[in-house]
Length: 457
Image (cartoon, rainbow, N blue to C red; front, side, top):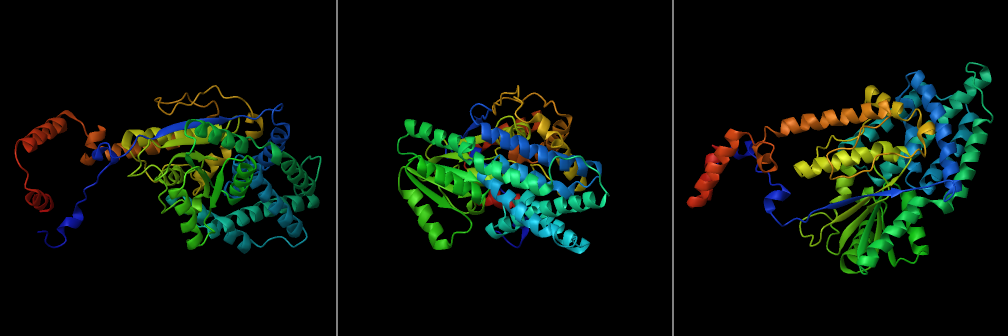
């Protein structure tokens, strides 16, 4: 028997590959979502105007080296590639906060510092865990809207006093109002919603009774997806968010586990702790997150022990935007890492918690208005070794940082013999010793108790 605490210094780690055949092979499809002036004129016009509005503020902040102060603008841009509904809600909140802020005295340094510190804490938590609670998500969204409003109000005051001289055709109030109106006009032309419905129809054409899981970061996008799918007559549409109480959560998950022809639209706040693989092996990601940990939490709802079908995962991305230029490249790296090592490090992802990281991130978006809707030459194949390098030096630098993180992780992994079956500890001597031990073990009975005791002594 084991004595004392010696066993605490030892860990036996099992990978999925060790259980041979118990886990199905994940199939991953990047799904290209296209929008053109001909097919989606109002949607394209809104995105062009939004990126012009945001890029000018990012460039001004970058010149002044105020990187962390404009990360909220990038969050707004991130919402815009999820759904128009998610972006419009934030714009309306920004407009409301701006109207109030511009009429008040300038914000105190203490108030500004407290808001930025809270936002930084949320970003760090997301980087570490991949998700935050529903209440934290709501507070983060409000703080980001407040941050944008305060930044715009500060600029307006500087222009009025002559401290800053800029050429513009409209006031900030007029620009925000115009963006809100353009977003409202574009709601009916959202290509992400159209593609989700198309993917569901394609799945059902092959598997008429299939259950399908749809994940999004934002509750506003969730509401938009649910509404659109119901209007499209695609069967029973369920919704699950972090705002649901436990009885509601249990009721919805039980329906999805026990009935056929269900579509469940869920947010990240409800991604952890539920198993949905019993009758589902199709998952659609509405948008791509900064942190792949989020993806693994989502994918883990259907890609787990007990799944009887190959889980099929679809990553939707809006082509001609940063979602294709940056995030899809990141996800491709993530998927290759997962396939090679069967897991990924928790630290993999785009971060902004340090000034240097924030500077790299902001730099990638400085010319987003110039890069928007330009077609990419790269065709993404997650099974290929690597895509060609991006043309943008800033994006190349950002992804190089991810590559350095991966290389460091792979080097560290080589020192762990439990990765031997993945070929990461396969020098000649180790292979010979392992082969000898395996043949010896097959030739005679193993005393398991003696083996464990020898290991921990």
